Image (tube, rainbow, N blue to C red):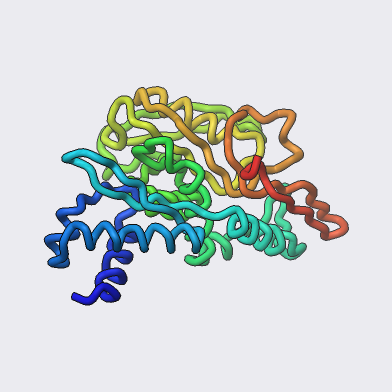
Length: 270
């Protein structure tokens, strides 16, 4: 196989298997090349990943070592993605009753969701995440996007138990915005004790739902290592019950009467 052909196939394999340790003998045997040639190829791929701002290759030495592709996003690319999202959400036609915004079109666009997933994965790649957890709402596409870059499973918390889930653990929690008591459940088979999890959600007002998920995850002895939300509501900051989280956007002002929306960058860059 020519080097040019080998570079293409190796790059594709690495991108399709993020955060997975791959040994040099695997590449050497697969493509019939010497380890020294494979090492040179990996150096070229690593350099191009960095120049394109899409990640890098992390080397692990030793007998069980190898390389793994770590997704990353350059600062310029991150700002471009978030600025674009801000402009899209400032369309006054998105205003819904209760200060919410219509975001289904954004959460249904594969390329946009993939960009969002890459941003969160870039931020949380070094936390040894075992699972992505979300609640059964519009945050599911985002959770799968993040999970695809971190190469981990998605765990979905539900409002009502399903017979296909088997035995479940349920808790009652207080919604941060409406102050109503609600229920969420999770299958006992979803998580192993001691897993490191990342919570992903599409929108956060006071944070009651996310706080409920944290309480539910305590029943599984899970470690919540990170919380990522696409957008947060600024007017709920004083009553917010979640402190440590990463947001891409902040809905600063929603004026239903004058049909005006102000959306700014969240705390992603802080």
